[in-house]
Length: 151
Image (cartoon, rainbow, N blue to C red; front, side, top):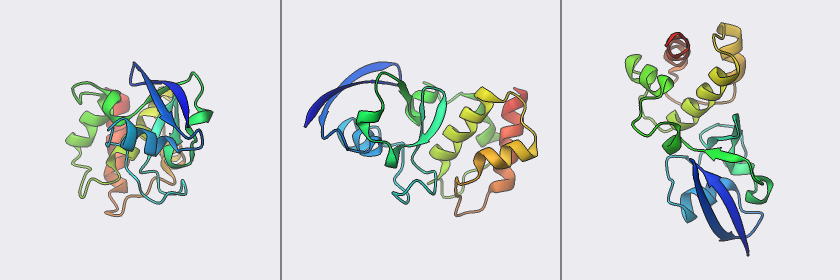
């Protein structure tokens, strides 16, 4: 075990964990930030997506020791009131069905819009590739990202 200092959602946190513990489990089990979901455990589905700095990463395969001093943002920290443009667009386009993948989808989409203000269809499809939605709301996801880009 090691004491590791983290910056999560704008707050300093210290955890005492094995340095190889995936960030997903640090967030969920040690910090009670359960918005980030466990999906596949092999970084293939995107349910566990968080931001490391401004980059969307899969937290299930990110050892806590690899974070260093980079800021982490989870779905809980994306917006205090749930009013981030991507979150609002998700509601406007009625994207969620079962909702399980939504945190990862929203985190990936918001990272896309940070680096590409007005992405075209190809850029959206490329960026969102690998974020799996079992309910297949991909067309609504794309429409919501386009709406969020305009706001």
